[in-house]
Image (cartoon, rainbow over all chains, first blue to last red; front, side, top):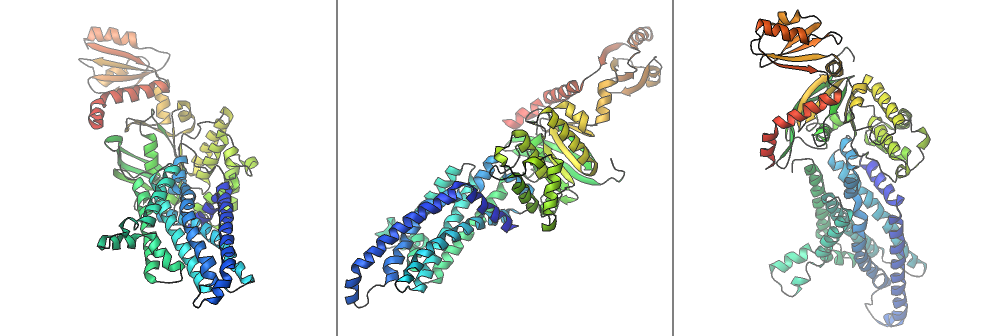
Length: 251
Length: 323
């Protein structure tokens, strides 16, 4: 049942031009930035050859791609997730799901997996760029894999936030703005406390999504970072289920 | 109606508040298989709220609802398996084709893969949608969208079908077709439909519930309603009333109902009018006649009568609640 909903969600995305245009625009910009990095690498290559402990091709070309991707998708993911529930609330089609023999959990997971499917598709297209480097050099596969895992977990977290915000309102734009706001806040939350070094700043930097993203894309795999994302995702999924359940109650 | 009584819907003392507003107040009724129930009431009477509660879209503040013996809150999945619901706005995805949408609905209702195609075809055929299967729902007219909505509600052959104003937006021919469809479905299923089109009730329903200000004010079979409409009757009141037998002896009087406050309802043959006789006898026998009202109501009059007097009587309570 979850998969039926997920597939329907993915289909709906591709029935509207939104998904296509997002994929096209992102791919164009990623390609442009990737080429820029590649150009940089070619320029500095002679100097790198003389250095000991020089950064490799992956570090110079691929790692920045993940930083750029994270920031761009921070803007884009709310657009993909905003319609998940709010559009159904507005057009009255949520009734269809609620009247069917499906639990709220299945609805939420189905919707979530639909977007996850889209993310995987997007990552596969993105992965073609680092793989193209194999034509003329060696790639650090461990680092690339770690980067993709980081980006995937990050986007899965964005989606969970977006899904929750979408259950709160029947206006897709409000869902988009508020999920964008929350994601951005969690991205920059440790900037303000960067100057001091008391406990509050430790907490802030633990909460910050960026702090858990940076190590992974530079190839440092820590289980605490993975746990952070998994906890983050499950929190927002549970909140969404509870929110939908509460809609039926007296208020 | 089938001979085996099988309670499919049971609504037991259900109330629902929106904040402080009491939208549905202590409604109870039961339904058997093969019954078509009409839910009548003015706008804002609580018809849709009642339907939303029966379908599990809203949780009742008090009371229990069970579908096919399963409580809608405790066993939602089992209860909803036997439930088809068409809300006020048809819940259709406008960017899907009719076939795709119905197939998705079949999957949602857990129809096995082998039967999905067949279920879609049957539903389309019943709602006369064969020619639009490949078209986008968003491009169809309101009437067709409404029919897609009905198809969605009956695709899994549920025991209970709930239709919220099913004929809104349809042309007269389509309305006739839909009524016919409802009549057919009503033979094997239990159907609840809400409407404020009164002739629709007499032509399709077996039983009528009238809701006003969230309260159930009348439960009557359609036959009973017809009787109220067509058999002429007199409402008489005496301060010193004679017994019922004496009243039955008046020419043409077929039935006497003893009401409260020394009032009687006399049913008489339409062509004989006992009024003159009653008045003269009342004077000679000193029954002290104080009221004599001829009753001959249309369905509209019954409806207006019931909903208006009821809202008048319950006004103090509703004011108290809304403040």
